Image (cartoon, one colour):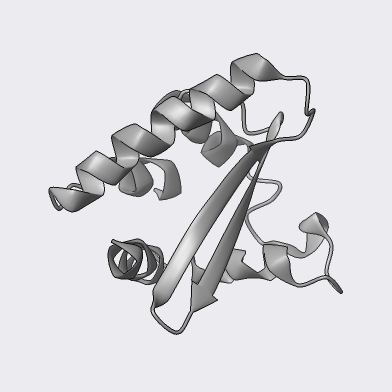
Length: 106
């Protein structure tokens, strides 16, 4: 599963998003940070606000992972939407379906 997520990131050309985890860089350094059209597609495809949440893309020896969290710890709505999306996207990835990331990154 982790390998599939990493492969999806690399194949979509979104590996540049890995800069989010570099403590010496700000979100403004990310080439996709200011892309409002992509944020709107993310809102639609993922079912939660990209402005109210943060994604972290991590590579590891066995593949990688994506961590998504609500920016406000009291934002239970975003938290529940994230959980629903991650269950949904994990099932889609297991089936070889990468339509949502392709839609968001287009």
